[in-house]
Image (cartoon, rainbow, N blue to C red):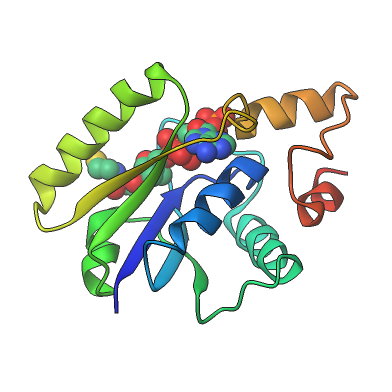
Length: 158
Ligand code: COA
C-alpha cells in the first residue's frame, strides 16, 4: 500500500489544499493530511481546530477515513512519515517563489532522511492565488471567501 503524507500549516485548509488532496488520491492508496508546525509562523487557529476543519471538510466531500486520515505532529515531518510507513511527502506548488522555498525544504528533508521522496503537484490556475493568510486577511476585511474555502471552514472563520 502506497502511503503519502501531505504536511502543512492548514491555517485554515483552503480549496487549493483540497484540490491537491483529491488529485493525490489518484497517485497513492492512502494520504495522511498532517497538520504540522512551521516555527516561523504565527497561527490564527489552534491545532485541534485545524484538524477538525479538515476532518469536517473530508466528510462534506464524501472522502472516507480509509483513504484520507488527518493527524497532527509537532516534530520533523520525515520522522512522522517513517513511523507511519509513508514513502512520500506531497507538496503543492503555485508560483515560482514556492519553488525556492520547496527546494530548501526538500534539501533539508533529504539530509535528514533520503529514503523519503517529495512529490510536487502544480496548483490549478483557479487556486494558484489562494493562501491561508490571504483568506484570513480577506475575510477579516469583509471580503466573501466562500468560493475559496470548503464550507466547513466558513463557520470557523465566522
Ligand atoms: N492551495 C492553497 N494554498 C497553498 C497551496 C495550495 N495548493 N500550496 C501552498 N499553499 C499556501 C498555504 O496556504 C500557505 O499559506 P500561508 O503562508 O499564507 O499560510 C503557504 O502556501 C505555505 O504553507 P504550507 O504549505 O502550510 O507550508 P508551511 O511553510 O506553513 O509549513 C511545513 C511547511 C509545516 C510542512 C514544514 O514547516 C514542516 O514540515 N514542518 C515540520 C518540521 C520539519 O520537518 N521541518 C523540515 C525540516 S527542517
